[in-house]
Image (tube, rainbow, N blue to C red; front, top):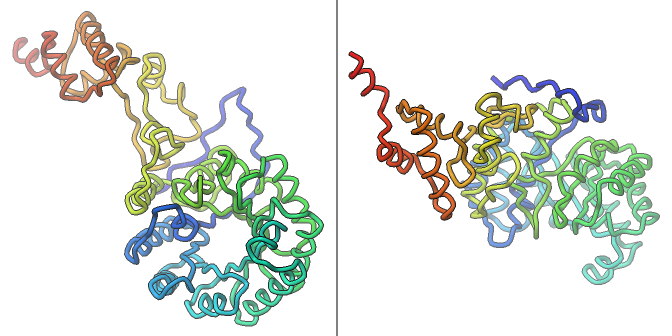
Length: 402
């Protein structure tokens, strides 16, 4: 059972929660995520990750780039046939790409073409007019085949606005179901991106989707700004993996929508930690300890003031509207240089000791000194400190009393 989401905001919190009514999740871990330098998912890796994404209730799974190789085609095809989520395949505005995507059996084909002048001229070696025509032809081919069409004007945030709107109106007239606005090089800011998405929504009847990159650490914020502006869906990847600095993070986006906007995504958030750990293992990309939601430190406390507060009430130094249980994680009290007596006493009791106040202070001094040398205080070391300080175990005290 998914925990109840709506922990009420505390008095004084910025508690306006009516900015959005719904937010869909388009996962691109298996496509853009795999484009992280040095990352390669095997067939089995893709199937395992897709299965969890599907079971969690992810709305769209972009399974890959079917034309890329026979192995990629087979993986996309098998994911499409085995999952209940909408499966999407990527395709350039090239006949071969589109046919491969359609043949793989995906329900959605995501076709894209560059629209910024720098990419049109120096990457595609084409003209603006040619780009519009290729985009329209590709959308029409996908729709004729009966598939859902998503069109992306790649590098939209560096595209001349008048030309961008020309392309959007052309593919809208051609019948695209979705228009994805990608911040391909991660240059958007939340305020500017929100204004851009509002403009796009005013020029199309298609549903709008956003794809944001994290070059300036703004990907998740930009994705949420896009949703606030009227986009229905955001493209995200688990642990933020993807090209260069990566994408908006699946876990950050989902939990912000659930906890900060109090909006139900339909995602089983209790499996987020499990999903993150599997993607970390399969991608070979270590998750930083301070990574929001899924990092080792996300629900860990060492500082004496923080640990003491959390022991009394976890809402004191945690968001409150997001608990470790909601994402399938556990709260940790970490021993080190900043540890206080409350935390040491708690851990000693957990280990079966019954310390006096003086013994707690003595063990705390040992823990601080040990941690100050940048050494990790494990349970074994804590128990050693306790025994050296003469702390008796609860069972021993009960035997003495008996």
